[in-house]
Length: 242
Image (cartoon, helix red, strand yellow):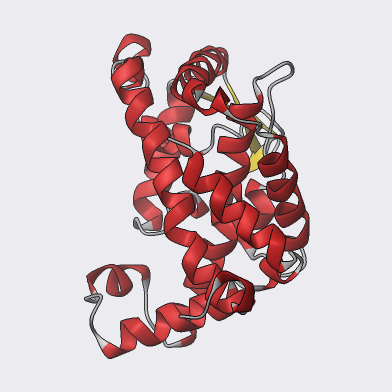
C-alpha cells in the first residue's frame, strides 16, 4: 500500500476502519471494567445492548420503530422488534405518536452510562482532543451526502450539555461508523445477500472480499473532504488514544 500521503480516499477508508474500531473497543472494555457490565442488572434493563447502541440518539429526538432495527441490522428484524415491544411494555421506551422516546428509567440509565464513558475516556486527556473533534465533525458533515438510512438516524450524535470532550469524540466516531455500516449493507444487498448470509460468509471467500472492496469504495466519500495532512493527523491522533 502506498504512503499515507498518496492514499486514495477508498484506500484510506480501508486503513482508518480498524483504527476507529480499536478506539471504540478500548472504551467499551474500560467501561465494562468500571461498572457498565453491572449497570443493566442494577436497573433491571432488558436488552441493554440495543439501548447502549442508541445512547447518542435516544436523548436527541423521538425515534421511529424502524430505526431500532438499523442499530442491530445483523439480527433478525422480528427479534429486534420484539425487544422494542418488551422495552415499551416495561416503560423503558414511551410512545410519542408513532415514535418512541426514552422513559425515565432509560434516561437515568443513559446518564450513568455517559458517566462511565467519561471515566473510560479519561486516559485520552494526555493530549489535545480539539483537532480530532474537528476532524470528526468535518467527516460527519461530509457523510450526510452519501450516508444511508442508519447514518440518517445516528447523526448528528447527541452530546450531553457540559459533557467532556472525550465522550463527544467517542460518540462522534461511533456515529461515523454508521456511514460504513450503510455502505456494507448496500454492498451485500447489491449482490443479493441477506444479513444472515453475510455474517456466515468467510472472510477469505472471494464474494466476501468483493463486498469488502465495494464497501471501501462506498464509504470513501467523507474522506475525500480531508487533505492528505488531515488524513495523517486523523490516523496519528487515533493511534495516540489508549
